[in-house]
Length: 101
Image 1 (spheres, rainbow, N blue to C red):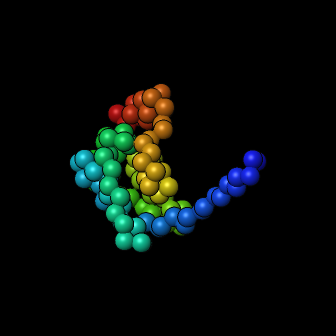
Image 2: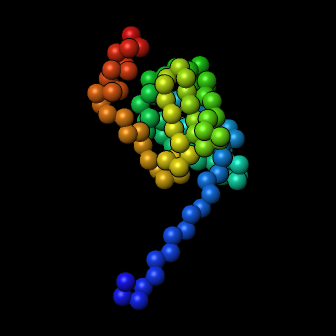
Image 3: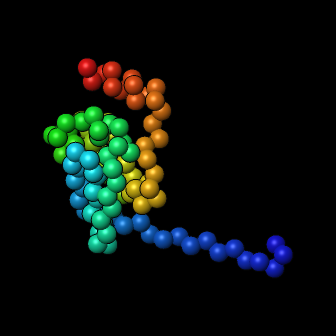
């Protein structure tokens, strides 16, 4: 290894204590005091949900995820902290969208 040493640091993820969704923002309050806010445009199912569907969010995965049962949407804390958008394929999203009609 040419005399170099690699160090891997693993940081614990904070748990979710509350999530709110407005017409343009998903905001997640964490147990460590941080609030992470991202555009709901990152998550097309949230965009297409109505206010009551967006408000029906459950904290899941022992506090490390969010689940919207009415929208069949799941978002993890790690992805939010890393700034990751939805990775759903256009075909999957279109199929879901057609099922809502």
